[in-house]
Image 1 (cartoon, rainbow, N blue to C red):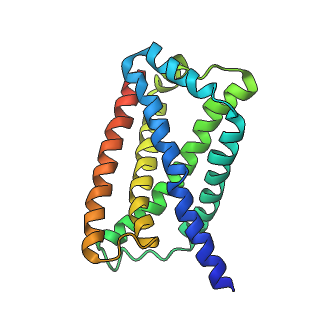
Image 2 (image 1 turned 90 degrees about the vertical axis):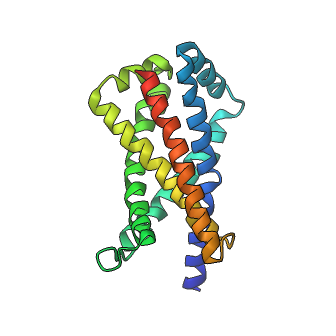
Image 3 (image 1 turned 45 degrees about the horizontal axis):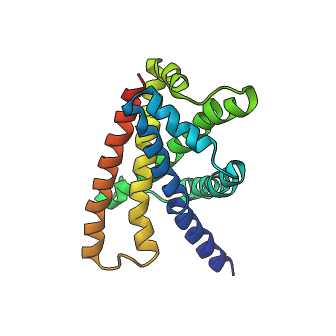
Length: 203
């Protein structure tokens, strides 16, 4: 019985990491990338997202609750996992370890980012716009923090796609898993370029 619950919890954790959290990450990166088109371009995109119908319901059900579960169970996995990179330094062992490390970093980054933007808007009425992000990222420390946080989140998602495909029986053979490794690393590099371009656009 305990084994079946563990199986379900891990499957749910894996699924939520891609749907809806992964989709939200892609959407968030896309909206933020409008900053490369200038202040007006970003503000229009941000205003559109802020005025979506049933915005608060969507945020709670599709974003915050899935992230909360994924984070809590992810921490359980991270701190109970047996890492053996010191004995077996294979590529996948390192990816396994990095997945856990970037998961913790991403959780810290998301918590701070939500506090600094979303909650500031809800509590103090601060506008979430280009100027807000410019002010935040004008600090070299915060720019570095956001850079590490965004790269960690993108790696965690991209490498998590590899695990997702294995977990759900999409990539079963060793060859298919090698191919998916290359595909997910390309996704990581492409999304990282998008994220870094966006950060520089704000400053």
